[in-house]
Length: 215
Image (tube, rainbow, N blue to C red; front, side, top):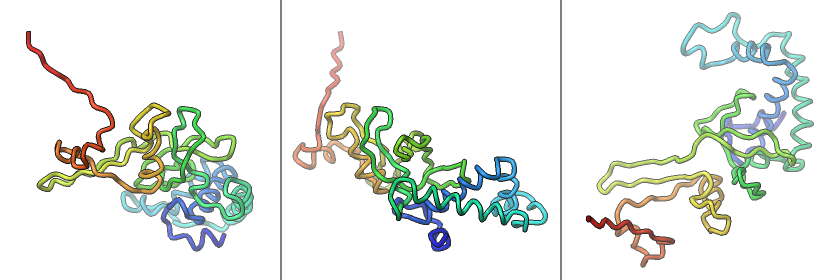
């Protein structure tokens, strides 16, 4: 409970509060069922008040409290028995890696869309069901995030979630999952030939030339 109360509301990979809150919401839905969970949520959903009249009376009711407390106990057990030991963080459970290749290498990730727990962030990543080890890997959502700055010259930055090669022996098979997506970082992309060749050609890993030969 202390991890939830001290949580700043940001779903970072190293956040204990984010994982504790997820476990609590997950336990609450399992105990209450979808219909009652949705009904309770509608009474404390600030977003609904922006678009329509809030249900009356708003807020939680006395009869909700026993279920909320029971969910804390269930969540605590799930929190402590899952990946990460006695002080697990969000990234111990939620991971990024090449799930489609039977690969076992993954890295912690923050954000995501966890609709079953009523959690969502601007980083729209969906996760698999728990694997045998209790971890959940990102498997849908953002695939090619790019920020373009219309300056002169144009600048742009990308954040591929996995890697740009599908060959397991390539250094770019999963490097961007570790160095970019997990870290919340972006890399510059190049528009001009001189940018690509600026490092003496070291940036060129492979090259294919298309030659037009008119008949």
